[in-house]
Length: 341
Ligand code: WQD
Image 1 (cartoon, rainbow, N blue to C red):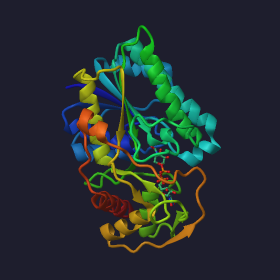
Image 2 (tube, rainbow, N blue to C red; image 1 turned 90 degrees about the vertical axis):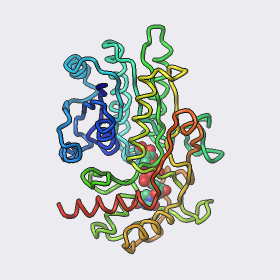
Image 3 (cartoon, rainbow, N blue to C red; image 1 turned 180 degrees about the horizontal axis):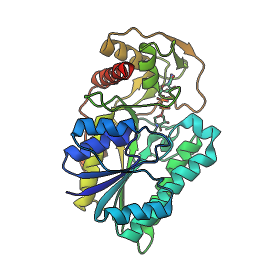
Image 4 (cartoon, rainbow, N blue to C red; image 1 turned 135 degrees about the horizontal axis):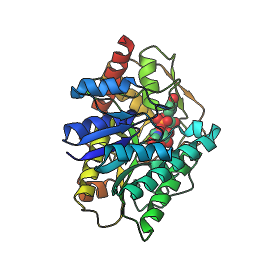
């Protein structure tokens, strides 16, 4: 079995990807320092798979510790690098922590991969690299724009670092950059899902917590945008579909199908939905009426962005298969499971 190291493997997207890797016949190994994830995710993964997935509790930015993991595991076929802080608002408050963690851990990882001769990397990038796009939908050729937050800048810097490292004469690492749009939902088993720490920054966990009575109401951040109903538009992708995109990317690297040392793919549904559409679709999916108000705009929000998925469909041969309704139903099922804990 091909051994795949998953950094941030106890996190939201990481844990779903670990499950899909194992069920697709790979041997996932988790690395996580639990700075932004919870140990309970390991139990959820085990409950789904019926076996424990090994986990190294280290910080990816710790060069010596990471070297030890690579040497202890040996014959690693590839790495999927999720480990990063990802809250836009928080990054404005703690920019140095974001640069140190997000950029530092990638540099350390690339260094150890080079030393240990591990040649395949899937990197978790983000649609934030597009900034406020001039045209929609965005393709991989859409120019990136100055990001509106330190978080977005760390993702842009990481993409540049991957490209520059690939250009070095002694480079042996092949990378696929996956630009995520907005991951939502939870595994159908409701044993793993999104576990926001504190007040959720993201829309869907705030919706489900409001419906569960944990929050009084949802505040929709502005309805005066130049969009069909005035609220922001995003490309919401079911987290298990997103996880499956990583399996396809890993196998593409193992098969050496890539024509270049670095390939970039948008990973979204190719459709945009507004915040109000998310509310009405959630109400339909859950049978719960949602209490919401319209509030002021949130600084840094992009009015509208969604993916052109032509390249992912034609080159990566990946497409999403889950409807927004089903993705939101899974988010509600997960919230109900959390409420019972
Ligand atoms: C979605 C929409 C808000 C909360 C961020 C990162 C992105 C990715 C996903 C990591 C926006 C509106 C939200 C609320 C609201 N992260 N909203 N009330 O900002 O599109 O993307 O998270 O990969 O990189 O930038 O996601 O879920 O925060 O917001 O009205 O209480 O919901 O204004 O339009 P966002 P989000």
